[in-house]
Amino acid sequence: MKKKIIFICTHNSVRSQMAEGILRHIAGDSVESFSAGMIKTDVNPMAIKVMEEKGIDISGQYSKTLDELEGIEFDIVITVCDSANKNCPNLPGNYKKLHWSIEDPGTFPGTDEEKLNAFRDTRDLLFGMIQSLVEEEI
Image 1: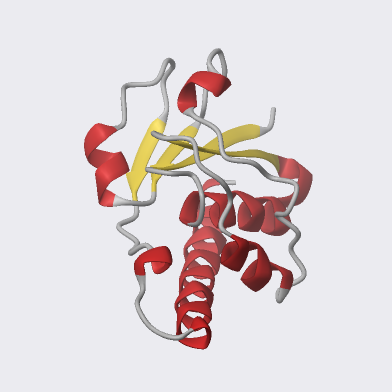
Image 2: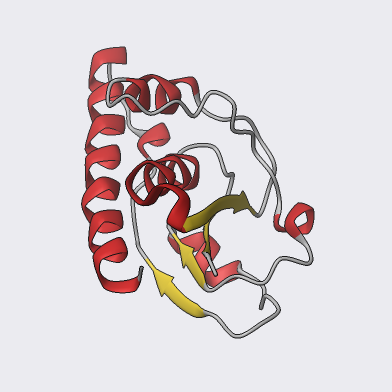
């Protein structure tokens, strides 16, 4: 049975969306990868761009809330921002909960290129963390 893993962030626009795509890319069909937020927004275009640089297309992903995933029992729940960790409701089922405190590159000040570099740094950080997760849990 495939493990179901969800990444939760406040807006489900950057970190959780990138993590969902990275896990799907690394683990393939061995897992079901999800993301959600406390508040529904849009996927940040810079997140889509930096993921494309690594050959991962998240342009078809969309922002959703946990309510939209009601009824799914997850094996691993990962919050990727401190706000989501603090405000995440208890989900049904018996799951392993992890918290990764990752800064939001969407709030990084600077030029467009400096902002893109912040998104790239976040993407690369997530790659490493998810690679370790797959090696340990899948």
